[in-house]
Image 1 (cartoon, protein in one colour):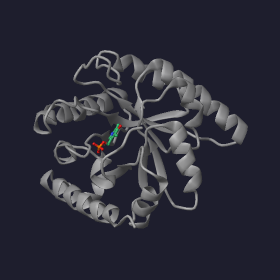
Image 2 (spheres, helix red, strand yellow):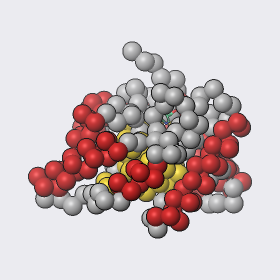
Image 3 (spheres, helix red, strand yellow):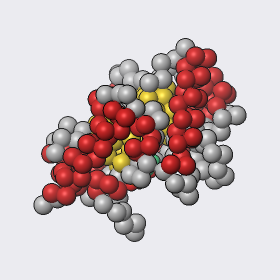
Length: 237
Ligand SMILES: *Cc1c(COP(=O)(O)O)cnc(C)c1O
């Protein structure tokens, strides 16, 4: 029924593999997160049946409903939307990676929710997160500024239930894919220096979407977030 999804996945993976080779890496060094926000659960099921495991959702309520409906499938869920602090309690146990950690306040609230989750479930979860960086200094854009980054990093160092595994970037929409390259390279450089300064292992660079995942991979992305190319255009209600 949704044959186009399997085909689009195959094509996308071929492009990822080629971009990996262009950057001197293996295709297995790059992971594809299928961004399924606003699309029905049946689309996710079709992609999962074509072998896709990683899915990213942006809206908590929508994501939880889909997780329930698709509980019979082997799916790994990422949270890729803007996280509101009043929704942080829904993260632990539901998303293996949060791409959008971008403020001290959010980190503190999420950390509390994870500790509470561990207390009440008897688990010992360390929530993986990426720090979203607003490298282009866009106003009204999510993401921590480069100037605020050291403070956030220092605070996160004292939150044992949160584990930072890398950085995430959402470049300005008005830039062409080629014009985004310096930002992709910039995120990589920032990751490298942060790794040196903190001694943390920060292997993940989440950057690249439908229009620019090839450029992002060539500049070092390890996790690309592709929606439209796999599922088609989104209809917003
Ligand atoms: C929606 C979204 C994507 C996917 O965008 P496409 O252009 O449809 O591939 C990627 N990352 C984030 C953070 C998103 O919100």
